[in-house]
Amino acid sequence: MTIDAAGASELAGRARGTPRIANRLLKRVRDYAEVRADGVIDGAVARKALDVFEVDERGLDRTDRAVLSALCVTFAGQAVGLGTLAVAVGEEATTVEEVCEPFLVRAGMIARTPRGRVATAQAWTHLGMTPPPGAGGLGQAGLFE
Image 1 (cartoon, rainbow, N blue to C red):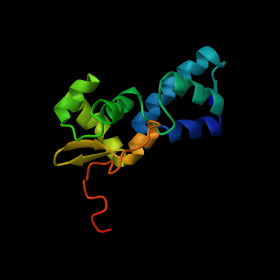
Image 2 (image 1 turned 180 degrees about the vertical axis):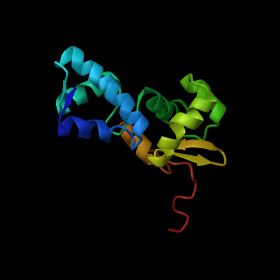
Image 3 (image 1 turned 135 degrees about the vertical axis):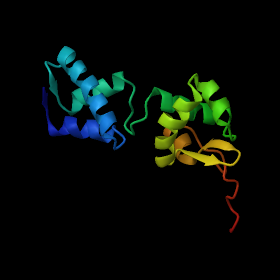
Image 4 (image 1 turned 90 degrees about the vertical axis):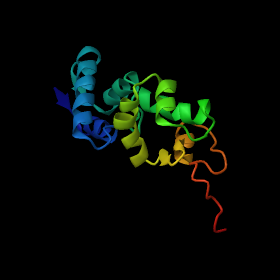
């Protein structure tokens, strides 16, 4: 396979800094390129392939966006327990906790609070929504103002 710097950069930018994910995305993009682009991966082919596989520019996939959507839309920004969140997105609780949650926490899109998981203002913005006052559920906005 042939990949140029722009294609490699596009893959790396959406791989969450995880080699295992980079390899998985590379295999998917390679297959796409073999069918649609004569086996050559450039920046445009990588973007098109990753769009087909629903991996956005931050590396979030369909399941990650379902978690954020559940927190922001379904539960209207309120704190949600792991089991309830897992049922809402149709995944096992361990999948949400071990696969989705670590990256979303590290990316600053969800916060784990004593009352449950909440979407941060960054998650609302990523979904194209206006965050409500105090988004993030920490309940201390304005405490020292």
